[in-house]
Amino acid sequence: MLSRSVRFGLCLFLLLFSVTLMAAPGDTGGTGGSNDTGGAEDSGDEGEGEGEGNDFSCPSAELISGRMITDICWSCLFPIKVAGVALGGGSGRIPDDAADQIFCACEDDADGTFQPGLTMSMWEPARIVELVKTPGCSPTLGGARLPTGSSREKGKSADGEYDNSDVSFYHYHYYAFPILLMLDLFVETRCNAGGFIEMDLMYLSELDPTWNNDELAFFTSPEAAAVANPIAVAACAADAVGATAGRPLQRMFWCAGSWGTLYPLSGHDTSTGMVSDTNLAAAKAVAALHRRGLTRGTTGSRNLCGSSIEPMFPKDQYKWSMFFPRAEADGDHVTGETTLKWGWGRSIPGMGEDAVYMLWRWNDCCMVF
Image (cartoon, rainbow, N blue to C red; front, side, top):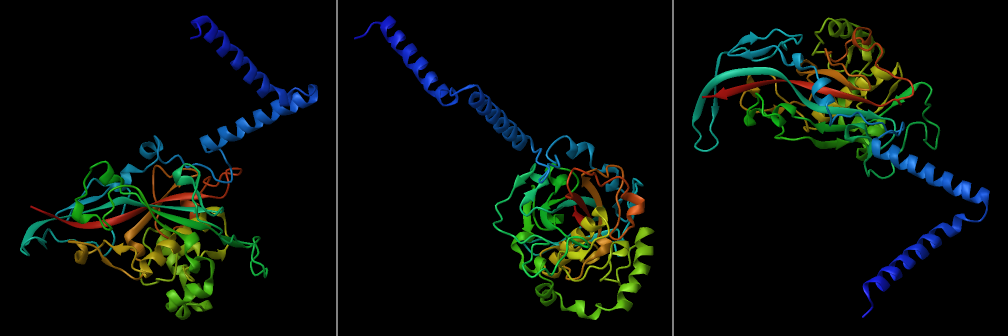
């Protein structure tokens, strides 16, 4: 057996020898050593940037942080209606077709009997919609890159069909974000349309061929043929006036107020500015999900005991607030509301063209005794 001192000396020799071997490749002259050091520093900087989400091509919205409390418009929850009485005031309006009765009754799934209750209605922050230029980029997840594979980007069509100078195109990611349930506030499980109880990724446009192709999008929403004319487009001016006053016109299902038209339900549209472009794309995404039965109606007496399929986009059911790049923390806006009222200063040069919106949903519910 070797003595303790001999073993220690042998270990020290091996350590010094390994350090010498590691330093040898850079010890070829002053210039080579300087270049190796500089490369190591650059590599460290890149790793630090990726860890902190500082990649400008895929920024971080910092949703899972203190901003989840400070940059959400909590006053936008109000008014809350209990037994037909509006409480709390607040900046939110009540949809025209919201339930207004005092009492309600829902069938018990266990024995089929009806249980009486009181109606309760409110605005709830229910979904997150992010719009990104880079396929797979997720500002909501801290600037992570989703493994979506290869996706065609705008302006890279082989036939030159599209031109980035005047056409807007964004990919979208649709997240469940039931923050009231996550905080164990207000909402009963029965009144949770979709059944999500935590944040979850629900839909990605990179995997949807209709989002990149107007012709395929037409076959999923053939009603677009009825409104694809100048008269229908011009009529959207009335919806723009109503939306700016906080009352989008539900009968004009093809209009998104001052943002433009919803059809076709694809990612292509004429560019009018980052703020309106991204919110229009988000509205199209929600409309397309409604058309396919993947998003449900929660407004009205028919939805007191559970959500229902709503194939046409119920503009009156939703409102929006921007979360990134600059949070709309003290207000909200309806679909089609002019950006002159809420969009000033929300496009930050150098931060990319991505945006994250919080989707508020009016929820009518029967709270059984």
